[in-house]
Length: 334
Image 1 (tube, rainbow, N blue to C red):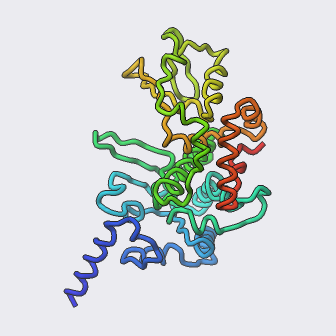
Image 2: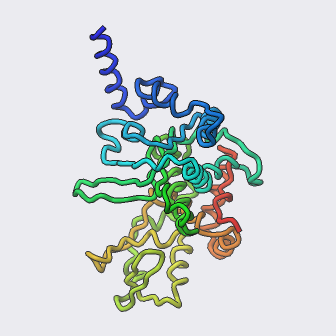
Image 3: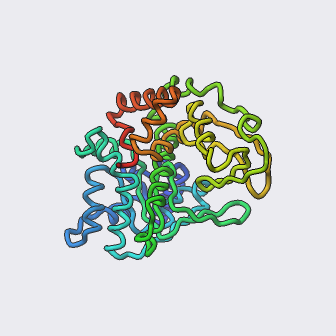
């Protein structure tokens, strides 16, 4: 009997060495006991009822009290990640679930253009295995520095932090930044890089291919006289505040929708870093850009920039055809 038990323990360690083995449907040693408990029905508990019903409809587990084994899948992956569970107060937890809906779930629960018809099929097939609520999300780097984040996205989870007293003080910008980060990373990692559920159409890249990897320092940053603070980044540029649209248009004309991201510049250590535009980053940043504008604002950009228009149509048509999902839903609601 002792040998059998040790063998089961050994199997559980082997299974956890591969992140793919930690699916609930694989009936792994850990998930058998953990996720049955997490998703159990309790009609007297509003939070537990939501978690149970969501799991029944999608197969996705919402974790309100994350433990290390819920996000550290093996010794090499996510080993430097620490999620602190929120206070297990139902009022607070429901606010956390509503935030998850607002920044992530509802975009895919109502995938069609009418935004009124519920459809769980996309979530069931393509969502990461768990959605997790956290008080704080921290990551320790090799240098020893500990960073704190509002969200984290890996192959098997999306976690949202600040599920505490701060949740009532989240600004519209805070929430919009969560939408940008979670959804753009989800598409680049979960839908494209890791699983290859979706292949970006070649004509999306063709519109900007001649600009990838080019050094724009000489083209855009003419001198070192003016410091410009724009959307959390400093720019050492020959552009003043009145002409910040010139800076945006420089990128729009080349098919890049999220201008501030493409500045590779460190205010503390370097004054002359060049600007590089990466092919790999293009799809993530384009999706992030869609979350930055209302539909009317985007149309004003699109009508004057044929590359933006072409890339948007190529991406929208491909995703509509494959997933019956409309990326026009990503625009800021007016």
